[in-house]
Length: 165
Image: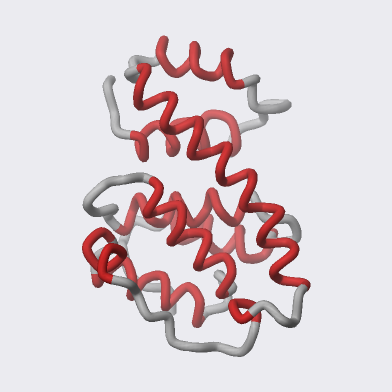
């Protein structure tokens, strides 16, 4: 199979999070399962590290959303991307993130987590379909986001790549 880290993340999410699995296997077992599915060891390790880092972001987001002094949790503002983010996140993807935020699917803090996780992938560009999956993964890691998750899940499984209306 030999897919990218993003493909592995989508595979894990699809196999373990969207199905009736009791729980996700331990890291070593999951790594073995992914290698048996045909993914390369190095990419599997990078994907599992990405997921572990996402789990760490859950705490940061929970604290940030409750802290009124946190600038990212305040009133809407314009997100200015730094040059290395502009190099790696396409105009289309930045526009899509903005639309998700305007629709209330992503909070400013969640947008920052998505951007952080995009940058952690160390790829040149992530298309909108893969971006949708990554947003869904971030939302699934955040407590109390069932409504936003359901809206995003609908967008993931739509056939077109239209920005939410």
